[in-house]
Length: 280
Image (cartoon, rainbow, N blue to C red; front, side, top):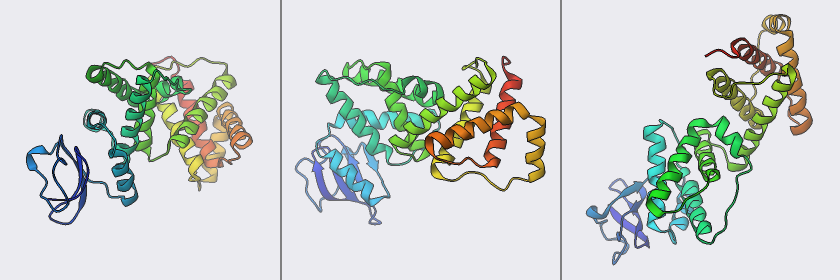
C-alpha cells in the first residue's frame, strides 16, 4: 500500500496492491511522509474505500481541516449503526455525518445552538435511527464533555435515515412532514387516538414512509387487478374514503397523483390498524 497524497498529519490518500484508491486514517500517519512512500502499517486505524470518485473528492476536502477526534466519533457511530443495529448504509454517510458532527461541535463551542423543527416526527417515525442518534449524543458527551440537547440526536438520526434509504436531507425532511400530515388525515377521518407505542402503529408508519418515498420518486405501484380493487372498495368503504382523502391532500399540497393501486393498499393498511387498535 503506497501513499498517493498526504491530506494532513492524520489522513493520507493511498492505493493498494490492486491499484484501488482509499483514504487511510491514523494518528500522525501523514507526518513526514510523502507521495510514493509505503503507508506505515502500525499507524493504520481505519481504511475508507469509497467507490464514487466525486464522493471521494468531497471526503478528502472535508478531511483537510478535520480534527481526527471528530472522524473517530463518526466512525464509531456508523459502526454502531451497522453492527449493533444491523443498518445497511450508503457510503456517503462517512462524508455527511462526519461533516455534521464536526460542524455541530464547533457551533456548540461558539455557544450557537439550533433546534430541529422535526424533532417529534423523527423520534416517532424513525425510532431505531433515533436510538442511534441518542447513542451518538451520549458518546460525544463521554468523549468531549459536550452535552447536546435531544434535538441533536434527531439530527444525527436524520443522517442515518438518509444513508439507509439513499435520500438527501431535504427529501427525508419532506417525507417526514408528509408522514405526519397523512397520519393527521387518518386520525381526523375516524376521530381516533392511536397508540404510538404499538407494533400496529409502527407497521402503519412504515407503510406510509415507503408510500411517501414512492410518491416523491415517481415510482408508485400500479397494475392491480380491477376485481380486487372493486372488492376493497366494497368491503372497506370507510377506509377507502380515508385513503381517497389522503390522495386528494397529496394532490392539492404536493401536486402528485396517487395511483388507485396505492390507495387500495393504503385502505388495507388503515383497516388493519383499525382492527388491531388497542391490541398488543
